[in-house]
Image 1 (cartoon, chains in turn brown, yellow):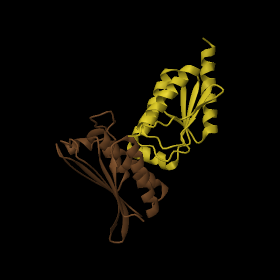
Image 2: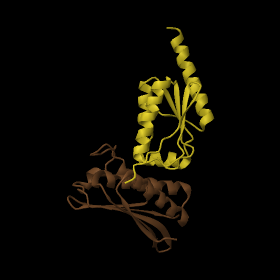
Image 3: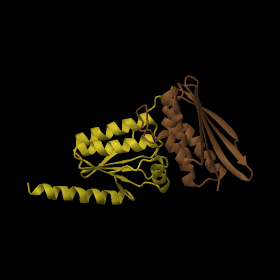
Image 4: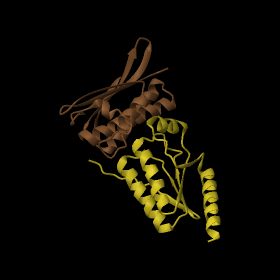
Length: 133
Length: 131
């Protein structure tokens, strides 16, 4: 099984490729169909944010272990404008674009762990994880 | 950069249009699909539209919102919309995303979707009959 893969994301076609890769990796790891859909949907939301706000960035998919637990980690990184107020964008319904502000809070609900680091003018890194039960 | 658009076939059965999504839609194809649907509704004066999602395993907020838009726009044109064949994983992820698609009529499968549309159209025709 592939342990880690980084994909360049800069168009809506890349969003689809990233979520297909993520889903395949999740399936190979043993996730059920509902968790596969959660992981793929979260990747779709986060990858779309990259295209929408930064123009381009990367999605890294990794197999991870913590103790006896196994899981998948998705890191979405860009060097776009960054986010001034992270707390604000994590609110449901907040959006600065055509979206309805579901991307980040939605991805957080779909996954087990969610981290966001962002600096205005530098970029954004969102890391999400899902563990096998 | 590839700009290949995927066009979803839209079939007509009696007074209804049926579109079954069988591929992973990227954003531009999804927008094209919405525009094609509205154009076909206008051309055919269809009384109902079924969007069948049996083969769709991912609906993210973009596609979910677009389906909601189609239903709203079609309603403005006097056409009822039923979404059929939502997979359990899709229903779960949509609600977890916070997209419950209010106002959208859903059916377990295409056949039940057509039955619902027939009933809705019949009710509407019945109401209009007295005027």
